[in-house]
Image (cartoon, rainbow, N blue to C red):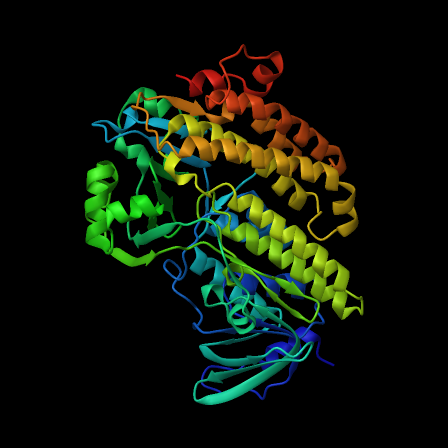
Length: 542
């Protein structure tokens, strides 16, 4: 008798063949992008007996360079892809390892080394990546076919019936109309929001942002923007700045420069409403003209390149009333929520939603009543999103303020590594009992973050910009960041051991950060602050 994978592979239609008749599935995944394909891989790895079908409007293979926006991962997403989905070899072979997040400040300078710089002189120990979305999705597509997951691509979804535990989805495949029914339906259709539209789940976000992004067929190396020896020697490995997610910062905006494994480069211009209205960018020539005025080295680096794509998106942030239901449906990826591209959290939310959905689907398949867990995990996901959203709301005005951003990045990294990422790395995302035991510590951490983000919003409202002085704030030299990322790296350390340490550190950081923002009178630095922050205070105030 053939094994399950053999049977499923036999059901895959060959090129030019008639599609097979539809049948009832355990899981229907609408959307074959990173979220949908990642969920399919996670489910088939954990429960190989599940009947899963993925429907995707594009045809595979997709364009490896310009298929999707979203080129950078941070620690949660990297852990999900490399560890949970077991794709570490693919990432190290096919994608560029990041050199952290790096920001440059100040009005245009004749020599780029005169800008203030905030970043790392060498990598922290946990790898993150610049992700070529198309290459990743093509790789997942091929692997899923080998594992027997059915993928219908080049199809158009027509309608869905959301009857509990008996969802039906009709679609057009070529000229033939077909239908699947399934116990579970997961919406991975991105901003189209198939289920979200059907059930009226859209909810506005308090954060407003606008973005223009494009890709060019040229590797842009920011290290080549200055020949200053001292500037180059800041890096332990010379010439590796270009592997960072580089940011050119200004009041109300930032510009990303992300290299891709194919040799292309992604450029994004992200703005709050005030900066966006002033810039009035609507096309590629307008973007180049704006860059020439505000970041001439970037505009010069684009000369001689070929434009691969161009997209403009207004008011990109949005929320969702409900992500998961015990009636057998869920949303993941951008079909549900989107906060902001700064810090690259999009793939983190794919990881979180996919972990929750996998847990619920597998528990349900075993006959477990998932009603309580669904509500509890919905609350956890909503809280994670709300805390992430707080990092951006009403803060873009301070993005050109080196002092504010130096403080902000240290605090935001500390909260992310010490709390949010820690929950994921230590397996708490779908563990209701563990989340209950640490609830009081989580509430304190959330309260501390709310207090800190309030101080940052007050500073951001001033839209300050300091004259550039060639200052380098080396985050690699900040002891508290090493301690917190070390907890993620230490597999032997439990969440219940690590989280109290994180909360205690955050508690001590708040007054120190407030002081640096000018919210409290200048005071003598305590021994504890000096131990946690090292020379950070001196660098910020330089």
